[in-house]
Length: 180
Image 1 (cartoon, rainbow, N blue to C red):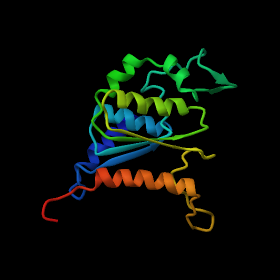
Image 2: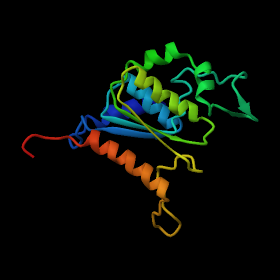
Image 3: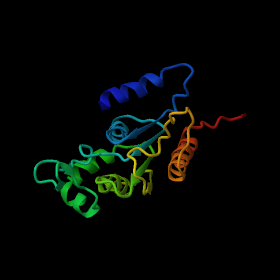
Image 4: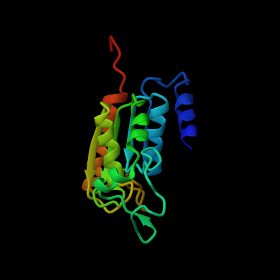
């Protein structure tokens, strides 16, 4: 899946009407992990990992000994995450990243520790990593979906998270040209 994602970036960067140095990506959950996997293998202008379920990228134990509530893995606590991730392997991947990444977490999510640990280890590796997190009941909350009546009515937290990631993209994707 991340190979397909990287191929998409490379394809976009070949199009004559696309500024190849101003291509970014956003992903939710596993899509957030694809942002990190892709950033470790190729370069693009900016990535936003919303609730990035980066189990594989951080080499996290998801086997039978992983903490669970019923069938759901519980990595809310970053301390538990640190004990169950292979830091050496994760850092080897993180060190290859050149792309600025914004991580957006969700305070009461059962994987919040994964989201936060990816950011913390990126900072430790000297990478351009930003963090924002909010308390919201919906997975993928920064995306604003159309209502049944056709309108878009984000709640205040959705609007704030959306504004943060659009500001991040504005900073990294708007190519500043000389003489205009």
